[in-house]
Length: 347
Image (cartoon, rainbow, N blue to C red; front, side, top):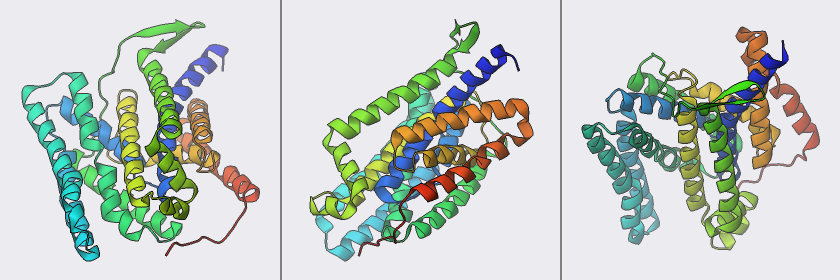
């Protein structure tokens, strides 16, 4: 391996790791606020890429129908919950959030596709169609069992992943897709050619990380999410509703998954089941940060991307084996370094 090849592999690994970093940060965000290891995170990223490819082909994607069905189910479940708890005064707001807004998003996307929109508009439409999915899944699947054990939540999350994989095959078929690059610019650094797409991926990861830092440190909503992550019972006593904080976390996570899918689609061929590997590699990075540290998760994810790049050069068939083997010593280290206590279940 020459120094030029090593530089190219390092740059490619950093770009891939930047995408993993967005997924890892979103995974940590959802876990710290809700205790859910959201396995379908990668599936949502893959769905975004496939949705954008369908829009590029002038076909309305199946994710629109998925949002409609999820919105109706979430509305029914929320209505039953409000009636049971005697909180009918909150019904108009629930109808607005769980039914009117998702249906309006799907309607706007469908009408916009009639006029053959440019690429920038298609990117926005793909994000619009993807963003409601995670919050709706939270209301339908996870909130009814929010006080369950982490193991129960993980089991349900895995089951939800397999359900989404089946829906992905139904919506998009078995063929892989690769969208057109977002930019054709390129530059040369230290004798190595760097594509504009690679720079865009890294810049997007840095921008989103900075925005999350500002959000958590300088906004009331961000501080409420941090409080919920630190102590759910204490935050509830301070007037913060963990359910609402969880919804915001899922909304932000879904948006980050969507951005990840858009960034990775032009450089990798994405299939209906590609999300599992994306999410799992990001999860390895999140484990480096102990599932609590956003900088640690980002650094770990970038490290996974670099390791994957060099491993693919040595043996493309074994690159995933090498990456996932990294999880074993990390888990052993975390197990030895962390304090263990019995899980407390809130009543």
